[in-house]
Amino acid sequence: FDVNKNIPRGFVVGAPMSGSGKTIVTLSLLRFYKKEGLSIKGIKIGPDYIDPSYHARATGKTCNNLDLWAMRDATIKQLLYESRQESDIIIFEGVMGLFDGALTTQATTIGSTADVAAALNLPIVLVVDAKGQGSSISAIIQGFKEFRDGIVLAGVIFNRVSSKNHERILRQSLGQIDVVCLGCIPNDKSLKLDHRHLGLIQASEIKEIDDWLDNAARIVSENIDIELLELKMGMLTDLDKSDPVTPLKALGGHIAIARDNAFNFSYDHIINGWKKDGVKISFFSPLADEALPMGVDSVYLPGGYPELFAEALSANFNFMTSLRSAAKDGASIYGECGGFMVLGEELIDRNGFSHNMLGLLPVKTSFELPKLNLGYRLLTLVEDSFLGTSGDMFKAHEFHYSTLVNDNKSSPLFKNSNARGENLDNIGCKVANVAGSFAHIIDSV
Image (cartoon, rainbow, N blue to C red; front, side, top):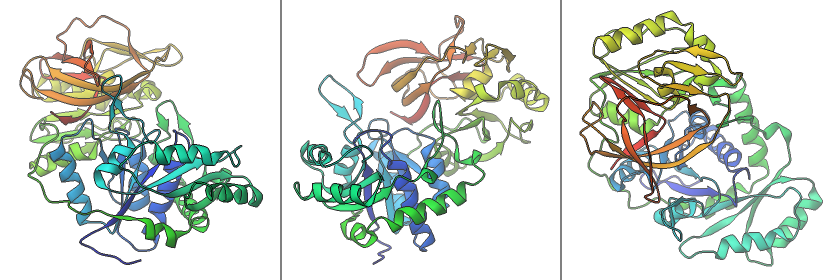
């Protein structure tokens, strides 16, 4: 492989729909190139915060998100420039189906995997789930190849191929449409990753994750034409350094960030932005009943799965006491989604049992009757706070099954609309120096 440190190679992994095998192919190739000794980087298209933890485990490097709807051009340029400096190869993992993005009007979308590939002039490796399909699969692939201008299909990787005869049929079908077959991955149960309600089980929860990654890298690399894939890769050129931008204003000068299996949905570009601004970052574990680190003046409780650990969290004296004391002493405390739930008064678990939370915000939340809330959000700050000045705007994403079960009578934190510009109910709340909402902020506007 010809390594050019100044111009890394790259490609985009897309698929006709979710569940086709994008993540497995991406992780396998990331791990394969890591074991080959190359400097490899994964970037996740869209707002997902679980897949990046797998990328990081596969490569040993943080994985950034890239979101054309939610991020400013300057933010994207900065992330790409920094990624380029440390990489021989960058693999971009797509989101949902190849052309699925944020619906901005009835006729247009933005932020799809195809949009990113076109913007970066990178080829697309299309991962297609071949289970139960034969020659007719070529019609689907031809449709994706010809659906829009401005994209290049490097080739197809068939996933869940059942036999050598099945592989032969699939390969022959591509001859009709002039598309290259880059590989056929067998239907191997050892490649499966477990899911829960918000996506994959977190990488940190899988004890044998490194064994899984090594095994996946072996299986996938043995069934993909690696040399052909490398010939098809694009070049990441024209990634000039941009002026530094801060996605989210720092909450303080020394921020304590909750990080464990209950609080793990944070964006690396947000935290790295704080670090670049000279902010000190300290991590702590509410699940391990750790008190806040000494000297902090602000606290960030990101999203995660507190609904699965509500009983344990409610009993953790050191965590609860230190957060309440910090709030009383004037520390800026901000919670997103799961963190917002824990800042509230009560959390009702899936079995209907109520657990006392921090009681810093007048909200009660429940996971007893799950209801999906999903989509991009344009947030406008209602009043001045540690997040900014009244009228400041942020782009964010909402993805949760928990609900509010009481009327929030405190000041709302944000005015709220979706990607189409339709007004939604105000979101979140603020009491003195404590604030939170169900939305995950991705960037300032």
